[in-house]
Length: 603
Image 1 (tube, rainbow, N blue to C red):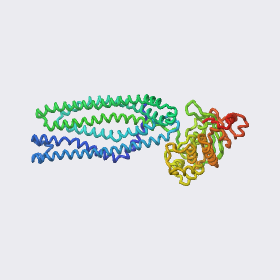
Image 2 (tube, one colour):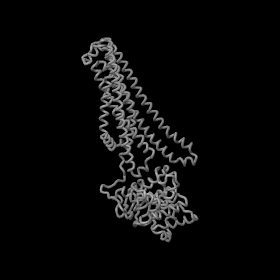
Image 3 (cartoon, rainbow, N blue to C red):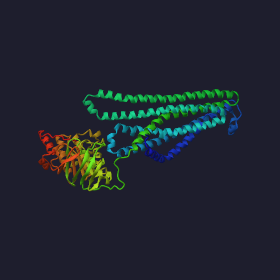
Image 4 (tube, rainbow, N blue to C red):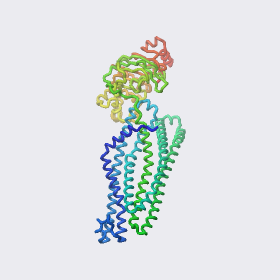
């Protein structure tokens, strides 16, 4: 089934509309280039027929009669100068045509790439969980760049070629229609054969692009796993696996190149045969006196020029096939509708109290595989809430539903009495601070990483947030302080330092609700003490939801929700749950039996 290209076409047409003046100027250059190609052989024809052979001046050259009937040396010099002028004009037209069409193409690709990037950001997490990162990267970069050939070179080059071929045939039919028919007779055979070959090229290119996407995904996955590969000494194994996966792509690329070469050579053979037939037949016509040597010279020059655009078309057709496949791949992404969208009458979330309620909520990431099963609970505003349970119990899923990264399958999630689907997504997420277990930082300055939670944050707000999470001291010791550029993912600072910057990022926007995925689970003891103190500070006057992996971190919580197999099996304070002797008590007993070492009870 072919993808619906409505959105893709809309983006292209809008950008073409913005580039209409560049397109108009490029079309003028095309007309100029075509004109120069038509007149290019005529000075040589006149030199042969009128200057060297002294033939009578035909009626259509009557304006040049004075020059041609005068001094031959002067006429020869003028015609030679005309050759230089035509070549110079042709070069100027060609230069501006390439410049303008390239600008149109790059502008188009830049706009399309921006739209695709923006669309990918809007697509729900369920899409990104299924998609292969490397293949998406390939579509954003390689596929969009491939389209430049269509927008910049191919479209207007096809037009140039069509105008040139049409104009030359008009002139040839005017000079000698029988010889023009001989040349024209080669075109149906040529185009039918090219159509067949290029159809095969397009199929091959489609398979090639698909394989390249898989290879890109494999490379991306491998580069993210280099520490693991080296730690296990699996470099040779990964090399062999990579080679086996790239072999198919290589074979398909070779097949594509072979078919493209066949198309080019086919045009070469047919064009040479056309020239030979034209010279043979035209030569007889010259000997019979039906044509002049200059006429034959124009024919031969035109035939070579006519087949040159055909060769260009054959080359560009292969390129266009690649671009068409890229357009299909991009259209497939653009036509995917985001699962999480704002309602037409959605309201802005502002200054929320932080009251959270789940009403009969069921949810599953895949149909038929529920993660949450008809759960209900109510969390008053300003309370410290802990979620505990085994791996896969649904703790992180609850956080995802509050953030509206997913929508419930059944039931409703309410904040301050309003269904989260009634809020504008961006405003809702601005009111919620998130601290993840896996610290995610960008390869930019410390200042920009903290301000990511509030782009318009002042320098004092940034520093205040850092001080409140005990990050200001170590930041000031960095060589460039807050302007220190971190390595990718924050790799140039320690885990505890990264986590404190993440806490500052959550705090700087002063959220109404704070969601934390055990921020102390992967740091050293000193950093853990600092972070725990910062967390206690962060929890003041706001609803805090702590996804707990270590039971020792939940004892101070106002309320604890205990999850098991997607259901809330217990809830209450730490002391109440211990007194009941249920599932929570069992988990806590296991932790106590580890002789003081915190036991991880799930993600």
